[in-house]
Length: 377
Ligand SMILES: [Zn+2]
Ligand SMILES: [Zn+2]
Ligand SMILES: [Zn+2]
Image (cartoon, rainbow, N blue to C red):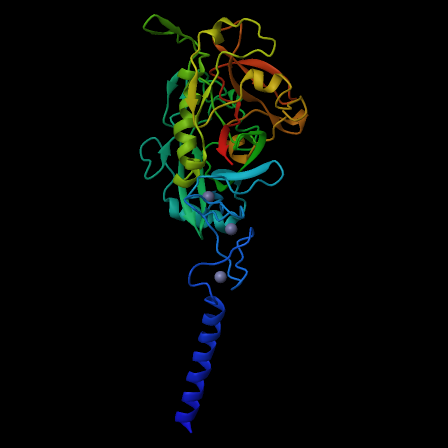
């Protein structure tokens, strides 16, 4: 009996295979007869013609290889929801779960100090005009999520030349105190598309994601050959460097970097009315992976900005870094543009909490960073 059962099973299995095979190769040995939807009229198989790209050359069906929202074959960003997409990770929301904080504190080891820093990394923030080592961070992973721990031995002043007194910082106003470890969760960065054309999208982060000075000192008028470099020159700014090394490398993995297009930026066109700006006129174009919007971007109407959609909220992490966050305007912050002020070599254009444009001294550390990127779509 057992043998009979076995034979029966074998026959059933074989007949199944032969059924599939008979549908599969019904008169299609010499090739299928495919319609415009790539369905064979004889055997009903769907056979796409992907060529070397990710779109079928016959029916236009896409077949991307998605990794973190980016196709690893064609480097396109795969999903935009309305005008929002996510790309990259950055520390954002403060961790409040005390048991998670305990676990993270355990894994970070002893909190750093002037004499020992363990695995903690110094931010190298400025005070009295010099770089100091009294603020640190550490990145830790737990349960598949990534977190950043932050501690300051002394406050970060709102300009690079001030002391770390509580009267010269916004960190305490934002609820972040000296000698305390705070943890922030790495979360997807939400980007807002402001322009789409020719398979590319220009986008800015929805939130102010950090707080940084534009340049570390206002006095530095450097000489580069015959050219005078002023403190408000984007090309030579510390913020350009920070965005294209620190931020770029922390936020994006290799696949995500491939979706970002570095384009030549016009750093001369700063005014919507085309008025002459001596400090902008001497600036070269730069080719940047990550940049800031120009004064023209936010003041002429082509990108659709106005004083209401220029009001920016910020992440907890940006507030912990000392961002000025206005209690009168729903805790919106000020943020940098990349264009030079037209009158003062030590000032750069910016947007304030109520969404109007102005200028600020480059060494201000309480102004926010709203990165801009161009992605392949
Ligand atoms: Zn066929
Ligand atoms: Zn097809
Ligand atoms: Zn693709």
